[in-house]
Length: 422
Image 1: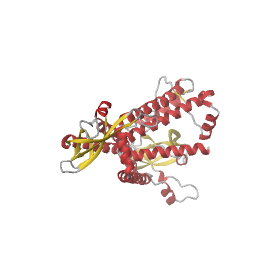
Image 2: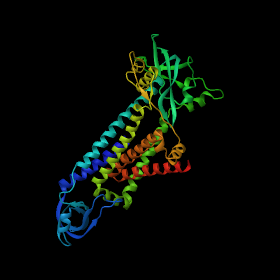
Image 3: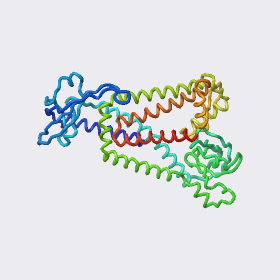
Image 4: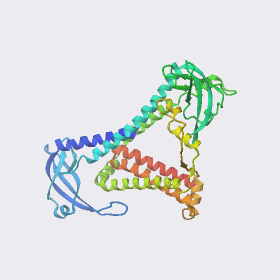
C-alpha cells in the first residue's frame, strides 16, 4: 500500500508538471552553445544519443541553460549560435525542454501502477485490520463458552521459515448448538500448548455464533510461569507492527530529504529521464523473463514428473487452508470436505546456501535435473526482483529511486555475504 501511494504521488507530481508545461509553458528561442554525442556502449547507452546544450533568456530577463536530445538530422544541421526553440516554466526557468517534448504517458503509467498497488495493499490492510479489530472486540465483549480442541494442524504458511499451525475447536453457542472455529496461523509453541480433547476458552458473537475467537489469555499457564507473565507474553503483536510501520515512514521521510538535497540524485534523475524508454524496455524485459523462468520451472517440476500425487486428505487440507479466512465464517468449516473425485500434484524443495554453493562448484546444473531446475528458479527470482525494482527506479521520483536502489544493494550484499560464508 505504501509503495503504491508513493508511486501514485510521484505520478501526480509528474502529471502536475506536465499540465504546467501545457498551460503555463513559455516558448522562447534559445541559442545553441555546444553539441555532443553520447555513443552507444554495452555498459551505458544502448543507442547513440545526440545532445545539444542551449541558453535562453526568460521574459523577466533571467538567463538559463539546458540540455536536450535531438535527432541525428537536427544535430547535424545545428551549429553554435543557431536558434533552437524551447519551452520553460515561468517560475522555474531551470525546468526547460525542447518545444513539443513530453507527454502524459509516463505520469499516467505511474499513476495507474500506483493506484493498483495501493488498492491491493489497501484491501489487504483493511482485511487484516478488520480481523484484528474483530478479534479484540470478541475478546472484550464476546460471550464466553467452553470449547474442545478437535485438531492441531499444520498450515501452508511459514513465517521466517517457521511453519505455522492452527487449532481447530468446537464449542456450544447460547442455544446449545455446536459450532466450530479455528485459531488462525500460530507459532508451533502456541499451537502445541493444547492437545486434542483439551478444554479451552472461546468467546463468540451472540448475533453470529459462528464468529468466534480462542481466548488464549485464559489458557493454563505453563509450569513456573505466572498468569501475568503469560498475559504479557501473549499481547497482540500489532503494536510491534505499528512500530515497524513508523520506522518505515521515517525511512521514507529521510529518503525524500536526501533525494532532494544530494546533487547526484538530480543528475541520476536527468540521466534516467533521457534514457527512460530503453531503461524501461530492459527492466520490463527482465521482469517478464524472470517470471517465465521462475513460474515455468515450478510448473515443469509439478507436471514433469517431479511432483508427487496428492491424496484426498491432502487435497482437502489444501482446500481448507485456502478458505481459512473465508467469509461468512461458516464457509471455513462447511467447505473443507467434498464428495467425488479429486486429483492433485505437489512438490517441495529445500536446500541450504552451502548446498547450492557446492552444487554450483560441482557443476550440478549439467549433471543433476534437480539442481538445474533450482538454478533456473533462482535466476528467475533474481531477474524478476531486479526487474520489478528497476521499473520503480526508472519511473519513480528521486526518493523512490533511492529506496528501491538501497533495497537492491542491501539484498545483493546480504546474498553475496551468505554465499561467501557458506
